[in-house]
Image 1: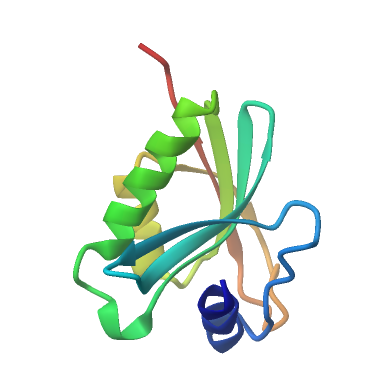
Image 2: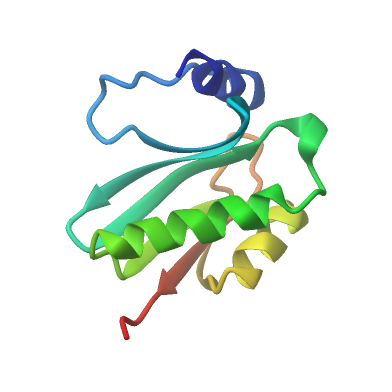
Length: 129
């Protein structure tokens, strides 16, 4: 998991403490090479997504969609039926990915980030067959 922590540090400015409560990674690898991950916390039938990242050199190849679909399916197998996340309002690529995965914007948090950028709170509710 050192590569996951290193990627998080590169993209978000800090390494992941996997011993901290709630820091659970879902990792996508191909031939043992890190493609991306979702860092999340599950509480019963609810998941809060903290971070999602794809190795920058692999952006635009569909890995984000593949990762999110696999993550949602795996969480559904564990009884999860609701997901939330926050995303920078100016991160159009991420917003598009989340919307394609079924997430809906439910709230705008004005000036949420340290640079005064807004955050969108997005939610996905899934139904079981």
